Image (tube, rainbow, N blue to C red; front, side):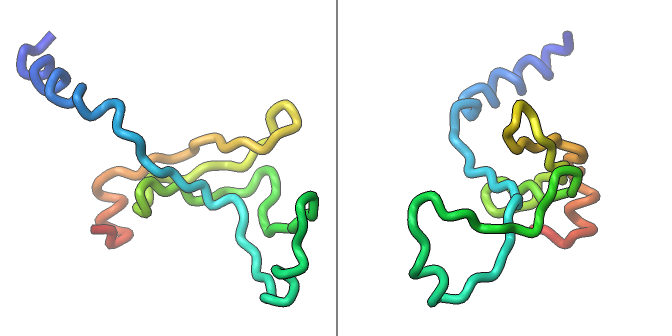
Length: 95
């Protein structure tokens, strides 16, 4: 293996355990304040996403890629379908 690559890998290891906030844009809906105030534990909020639809994946409020909503063992899950490249992000005008 390339000695330079090993040196870079070793340098980045100190960052491996840093927690990052990830957001999967699974649910988007609008609600009126009067309805929000009526919510209680166990209420069901309908969203605009279904299994098979594509969603945005963000990390620390920046786009990371896209995913597909799937159902796995009766639970919603996200299949990563695309991780953006630097060129993709430039095209999206992300700084």
